[in-house]
Image (cartoon, rainbow, N blue to C red; front, side, top):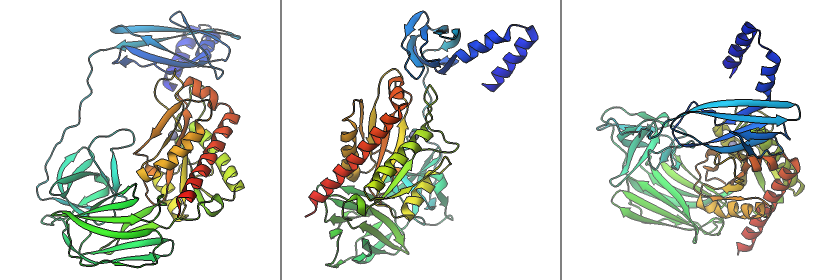
Length: 485
Ligand SMILES: [Zn+2]
């Protein structure tokens, strides 16, 4: 953008053309979307912004302008070069802008291919490692299974771009990002272990299941509902356990059971006492695999520490709306409304950022883990989809046990006169990935949607949204309370 401006300045000074007129045209219409050199579909959506209360036409057809000044429309293209003329008749004058776009049909993006082989190679996990189901990817990364502790060895069977394909058992494999693994020396074998002694005991705010192993083995863990239970598959384990000591003064865990489901897969089932889960964590302590399950707190805001996460910040602006609303700023302002409303009700609040600064996903999770939060709400604005349609609000969860939380909040949000973009599950958002505490992502509205943008530009609307998030949270806590026997 800068280089074009410099070029034009030089050009016009050189020719002594009336620079004023041109500057007005530059300032009059800003094209936010659709100004691509080459496209591969026969329709493009043009989004722009001009002074509010202008009369906008695109290729001679009039187009609605929103209060924010934003406008947009869909334009059909012919094969080859297309010129799109945009005009704005505003109180301060008439402006025009033209876009040249080349439409090329029949384009197919290339697919990633499997490449080399790694006979006999074994890797070991680093801190922060996690497993993916497959080699697919999108802007959030491939679909994640769960985090893995460090120091876990696995046989490498293939490599796809930035992932190693690893063997978990005879019949099961997964993928791990290369940055979270290093190769062991040639001749190192994948781990195998008989299970040793087990215990299940209360330790402070958690009940802990401890499984003695000879080596650190890979595992896959998930929570199931109705009944609520944590199911942990340990790969390369053979059961040699003849009893499990289970203390009777447990608060979160009802019982623990085990089952050798395959020659090299040991399944551990941890039945929970309560219907609603408050989180759990799997980690190694030496070679003992531990599952810490959080006891249910009294489900009232005055007893809870709520983590609030304002998306983006600093150099990461997040989405920017056509008229220039910046997501990171809206997120922070909405988090402060949540903070005020929650503190009024006696809750303690922990923020992942309290000002406009860069905070990485890892840092956010560290802050929440260190502060031992009971529940997390992350606030973002959405973007994408058709900018001409109202897309609305949505809530997201990663783990099935937190679906009810996301759904309950969404129900309250939808009492407003806005569209539902839906309840989205298994969402691969890093801040929702920890299993330590219930978490929900609220994607308030679409900044890229012109009708949504118009609503989000109103501070009263944003306050109303956040008050409903708090109401939804209170509804959820009431449900939890009712379910406790
Ligand atoms: Zn965002």
